[in-house]
Length: 222
Picture (cartoon, rainbow, N blue to C red):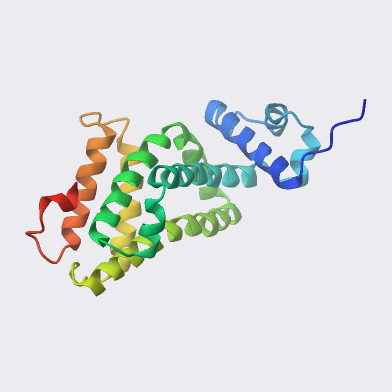
């Protein structure tokens, strides 16, 4: 019987990273070995080193993998509405509100099993400048993607005359991602509201800061 064809390089790399996420989430960075990751991925230990020079680099990619999973889930939930959001057409207030509610509800809830990875990355990066620089560069791209959409939609709403001018629109976009990060860390320790209720309240408050007309109909927040 012929041997099965080897997995393409991108698929093999994806399998290694997914296995690392499982191991790091379960055992922590310090408690995970490259051999354990290889076993989880059902490959040889040497194969891991073909893609990653060190466990620290694998941790960075594992954290990015978690971000990508959340992003994919948000796009899946938005469905056809995602195109309208990125196009900035129609009622931009409803588009940006729907995006905020979806992100604020999906990402914090979906990130609870991944927080250990990011805590470990913070610890590792604080002692290793090269890993810090790598993490900063890679995660900056993740933040830029989300913040770019908010900045675009704010600009569209500003052009339509529904949003008020802000002294620094880039801070608005950064507040958006900061709310996401804050909800991730607070969710386990402040169970006084459901994730969905928190998401809607946070989106309502942030949108209210943007609206030029404070008396906009309540259906904007529906």
